[in-house]
Image (cartoon, rainbow, N blue to C red):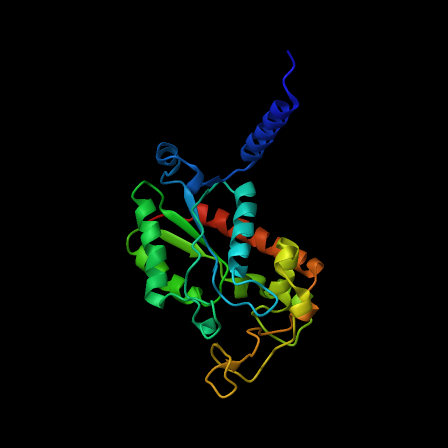
Length: 267
């Protein structure tokens, strides 16, 4: 007796889902049982820890979860190509430059440092010695560097993404703005490529104060870089094509860095 159409559709969807999982080289830790995790968390395993703020201002045209979008997209790309275990995304970290803007949240540097240290220590108990922080922030580096040193003293290796270094060459190639690094031409272009529905280009404005120093401030007489919008750069110049170039170069760099970590000896 032929199966009802609804059953055939359900079977087809299950086969597609199974096929998609089989095509991925990596594994999401959160999708495993502890029995499965025990088999995969070995001394040879590289654990990727995505970091992406879910509550950090990005001007009037991008969402507070902008960095979370970046982290989730990038971890999916890594999942497809790298034989790694990917831990759940850390959506709070060290973002002191944006706390004047409602909704923005930052951990203290010591807390942000220790969050990553504790995640690595816990997972290392089951075997892994190598960890990669898939980092989508800039100020986060200030907390990741001491985490590297602390973990090294325990025989654990932590590498992390340094966006300013990694994206420097490709940004010079595609950028037209005078300057900027936040909710700017480059970051907005990346989201136009990754998730265009998360961008409202009608609200994008140029806001670049080259004379400021320190974090962004809404107070024209305050300490820091004055930015009434929370933007530092010119997102009006953003395009999906620019975003594609930047994102694809970043994905290549992430995969190279992860492979380098795999070959790094543990002392």
